Image (cartoon, rainbow over all chains, first blue to last red; front, side, top):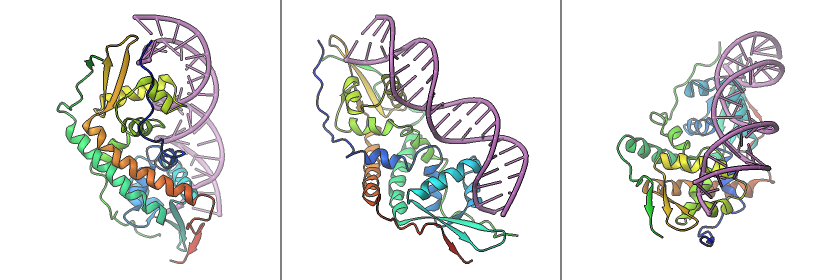
Length: 127
Length: 127
DNA sequence: CAGGATCCTAATCGATACTG
DNA sequence: CAGTATCGATTAGGATCCTG
């Protein structure tokens, strides 16, 4: 027989807002869209330049998705040819600090890459 | 002719730590793994209980991945049958605040769901 | 310019069965 | 207990072409 299962010491993300919110950041592009919109409203074509490797199809899909979730707003400008401007909603703005703290860790991660990190590579312990 | 492209007002996530770090949170399960490990070391079987819908195959894959990136540590306990305990490294701990701020937004998101959010559903603007 | 339509590839995941 | 192996389903995403 093995060890008894312990109860988790942390509560589950209550009814999973973690998952709910991660769905706002899913895939490769959502975080970038929100990141670039954090600098102010931005048009479709501008976002394509900001995020060079995204295809129009996928960018459209992500924008629609984020719009339907209330994170970004879409405004059709009355120009010719027509432009469409996207911006963060109030709710979307709340994601920015989270994103920034993620970037901070990502930066540290890159710094650490290359030299040995403190993972004691597969240590063995006595129980 | 249309509007000229504006320069982005935010810098790109410098050489993409955003993407680098998001890769630590990718897929459906990485964030949950880190979340549950934030309460202290946790064994494989315990994590499977914490995160009910993850398959052994995928959980293994994620754990290996996070281990190789230096975010979690793996320790084989000398019991019979053998147990394996996972824990956050120092670097992994840094992800926790980011995760918490994501959860905060997720919670707000759930609160707002159902009643009208402030997206002015596809307004039109004059330019 | 902003995107819809179509087609296709690669990655990801769950289920199931099996092993040291 | 802590995995590994195999399979088939789902999905993100790219490329290309086309339109209001």
